Length: 62
Image (cartoon, rainbow, N blue to C red; front, top):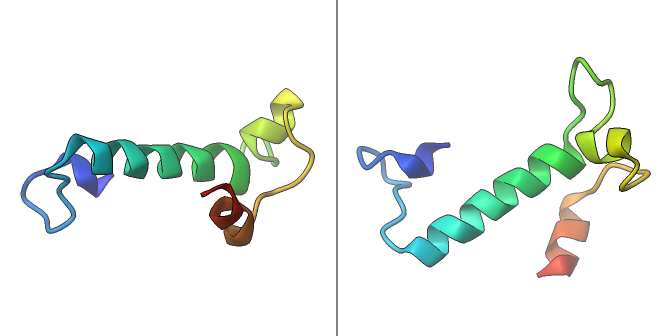
């Protein structure tokens, strides 16, 4: 993630903003992205959820 490097414009100067960005990254990684080796999302593989999440569902959580 670009937010961890201070050489880019996306660098987080506040810890709260960094926390939110990392949370969104992990939500997308685990719930909305199909992984090549699993062929499903990690949440689906673990039996936590049965479908891929959309951006609208992420927005509804906020």
